[in-house]
Image 1 (cartoon, rainbow, N blue to C red):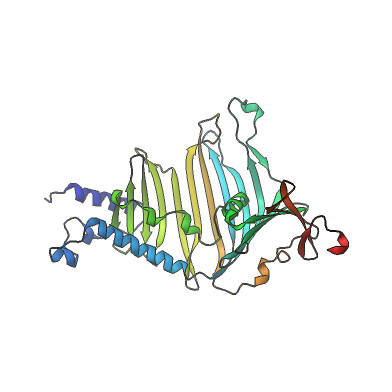
Image 2 (cartoon, helix red, strand yellow):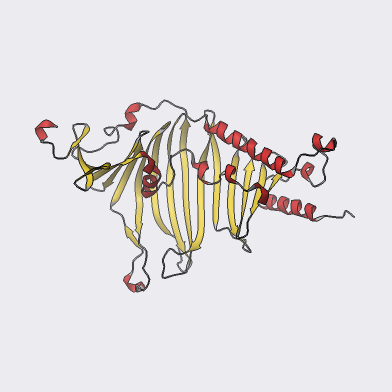
Length: 354
């Protein structure tokens, strides 16, 4: 009977985990004491750290090579955000919106049409539960966010088509997108949020190659573990990143990615992020599950995108829409502008001079 060492058991454990998640089984050539590598056969085995660095570098190269293929894109899809408190029978649909996006590196325009959008309040310590309402309906019917490479513009409209606009410095794009319900710096590179390979602590990370390509990673720290699966469809087919508290089997954060391909670009067709935590409500410790999902039902990469797409006129801004330019301060507040005759004018400009 084979005498299984602790190292063998570790590899076997990871392989079983792969099979449970539907991932390809581990490569037998990667078992401990294997002489599969030429370096090992010559008696000069590559160090474990060097082997891990090579796997990570290959994945980073594949990821960046794929990202370099992205020039432009057009997509249509759906975004939904739900919150399920453990003491409630059903999750609350906080955000449910149709999305349309245009992308022309580095510019983008995202149009969200809300079927439902709720605002969340936080109960302060000592506030009675019967006097508190966590969710209240938003007045917004749609929102357009446009980044032109320098500034980011947000236009919000209610159901009566009353609109307001705000202009921000470009560095605020993440905050503006998050406020709209689309928490990414751009609408295409969704893969960038789930895992940062360059920041991995490789000394505390085990990497197990898979028989059909790719690998399973396990980062073990004092307070948590993070497991991630990278397959080999194009060298960086990241499928799942799960973080666990020590002693727990249910992840407190779980990223799931499903990929598609269009005109030479591998893109994230469906992105899901599930976070399980104590409630944000300071007066309650009820467990809450927050789930964000984004799915593109139609996506075309590297197609011509007209420059006109990124104009206020193409965004359908109604005549007379007021804007606040938060890049400038006038009398202690942001500059007030007005959309008139196809462009932004000073709000106090006489109509005859617009």
